[in-house]
Every structure is written in structure tokens, then in C-alpha cells.
Length: 493
Image 1 (cartoon, rainbow, N blue to C red):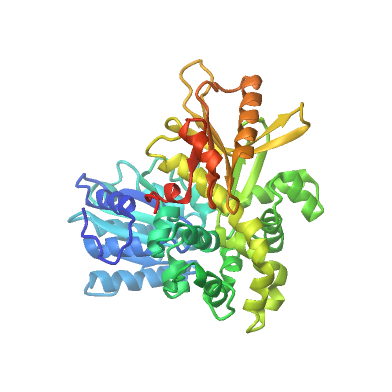
Image 2: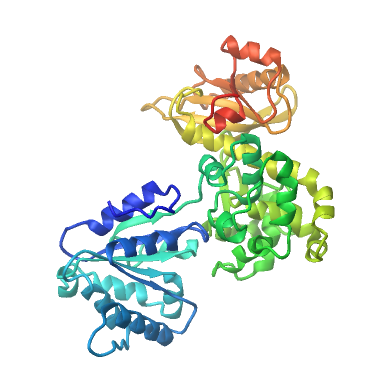
């Protein structure tokens, strides 16, 4: 394992993967691809790995092809200190020069923001493919560990896909993801689970939002949350203020930014289906397919298949800061740009934050807990997938929305087991009415025959608590109660 920087928070999996890739003693140059949305710490990880292993790091910028080659020549000259300065006239020469760095030992070589280089020279992936030919002398005699890194998710996602030139060439494909809700709470130094959810609903799990953009400003307690919001994300002097708008501007495939802002605003306002989004924008549902696909490829939006109805999906914003911007900031942007207006705007927007932002975010956190953190198997076993769904009730002429649907692994020809169905309420004390509703839903799902419901458990997720009657039902084994302490892996106070 490479020596780990003392200031690095978590990222054990990523650091371990990079260490194994870089220190691999096998002969021949190898290729790796590192991707992830902006502000997740990819550059920090790769720069730290290069420093620890004596490697070469090159950060690309938006520039012409020739300018990038000149900058790379200067960086290589400084790194290798040859008798005469290096001059690279083509990327064929450049890639060979990078492979030559590993002739004596395994050495990491990083091309950060690789999409900028490929944008200026679209043939660059093919040039790298040719350089990594199995019998090419420059590759065989090298132990360079070439790492291509980028934040443009749509581009990086296609780098190794389908018929892409580099498909089959990479020995590492590492995605640096946002911190989950537990790690984010630890990173922001939040010990109160309720406050942790509130902060997560604003800034999610992006590390840079605390260290760089908020300058380590974390709410001291729940009473400080409103003040923290107004002095950071709603403050026009803070970099967080315009971050949500910049996230779209930085994606190269999002050319019509006005359209994509409107699509995200529609979802932030509670329109989760393609038809609802189209209606909000005054367009036909079929016209939304491309925009939704692009946002999904960019990692800014996620599509969740309905667990109970085929060919029906709902959309949600994958970046909490964009949800916060769309629901709270975008409608009153002109007001917020005026200094000193944050407190007044926040007072008016607080209710919208509770309903349109934190409620849906809490539901998603519950789904992530069910998928990845239910170590005690309170829900009945290892889930294959966790999502949402809608169950029609012809008898009562209603459609029941199910917030957390946990499906297990199908055993051969048997129907998949429905491990659990659950309802999540952020600001409501849950009681027997929610349990009665879940029982009715389980009956309807059983009658539908899609899942094996013999072991289906009913679950109530609450950020506000449960009634004594519901706790008594839980003691009898009729329902599983999941509170904030459980979601955050902490014993109840």
C-alpha cells in the first residue's frame, strides 16, 4: 500500500485500488480510468498517489492541441530534467514519452481532466489504443501505470464502452463517488442525525463543499442550521451560491443549459415522471427523452424503475445542491443576488425546503440505508435492489405510493422475494394508520402475484418518531421501525 496522506478523509477503497494498480510489478505498461463528478477529490487522490510513488502528474486545461503539447513538454522536462528540453510535436510522441517514464520501475502517470485533451484532439483515445498494442515495444518494455482522469461523466462513461477505442485496454476503472450519508455526517463533524439529514439535503456528500467552498463552516447545532444556510449557500459572496449553476455549465454535453435547468427545476418542484416534466415545460413527453438521457449520463439525474409496474420510471435529482437550488434559490434568484436578502428569502422558502427538498432527500437516504447499511438484516435479507413503486387499489380507487421497496435475490425459477415495503416520513410521528396502509399494500401486491410476499416485512421510517401503539406493534413483530439513530448507525440516546 502506498503511504497514505494524513489529511485524507476515508477513501480507503479508492486508495487501495490505486495502490494495487500502481505498485503492480507485472511487466508491461497498464492503463487505468478514474472518473467521478467534480469536487469529489479525484485530483487530490491522484496527485497524492503520484507524490507517494514518485510519479508524473499533468493537469490539462481547456486549450488548443498544440498548446497542450507545449505544456506537457514543459512538465516532462521539469520532471525528467534531461540535457536538452523536451519538445513534443504530436500525441504519438507524447504517449511514447509517457510510456518511457516506466522503463525502470512501476511509475504512475496521470493525465488529469483528460476530456479537455480529447476535445482538442478527438483521435487521442485511438492514439493511446495503438500505443497499448500487446506487442508494441514501447508498451512491453515499460511499467508505466497511465491513469486517465476526468469529471465529464458522459464522456468518461463512454471511454471504455461499446466500440470505444480503449475498450478492453484498461486494467482499472475507478469511480470516485460522493460520500454516503454516514460518511458525510462524519466529514461535516455532525453528531446529531437530524441535523445531518438537513445538511445532507443541502450539500449532499461532496467533500469540496465543506473544505473549499464553505471554508470549513459547519453548523454548530440544529439551532445554527438556518444561520449556516444564509451565510453559506444563500450568500452571494460564497462560492456555494453559484455552484449549482456551474455544475451544468461544466458538463460539455449540456449545450442548451436553459433547457436542462428547466428540466431539473421541474423535478425539484415535484414532477418525477416524464409526462409531468414535459407538462411543466409545456412540451410533449416524447420530446424529453434526449434531455433526460443526457442529464442521466452526466450523473446529475437518476432514473428509478417502478418496482410494481413495468415501463414506468420516476426521475430524481442526483445532486442535492441542485435540488436545493431548483426548489429554493431559482424562483427568487434576483432577490438573492441582492446582498442582505438571504434571511428574508430563507424565512419564506423554509416550508418549500421541508416539502420539496428535505422530504424527498430523507426518503432517498432511507433507500440507501436499506440497500447498503442494513447490517442487522432488519428487512429480511440481502437486497438485490431497492426503489420505489406505485400500487393500484381498485377497491378504494386510489394509487398507493411506496417510498422504500426492498426486493431480494430470485432463487432460480421462483418469484423474487419482496423483502420489505416501507413508508418514510421526515417530519411526522408515525402511527397505526401508516401500518394499516402498508398491510393493505402488501395484500394488493400478494394478489398481483409478481413477488413472493410470504416473508415481506412492513417498515416505517421516521425522522420524528413513532407512537406508543406503533412501538407496541413493533414489539409484537408486526412492523420494523427505523429511526434516525438506526439510519446513521448510532445507538439511540
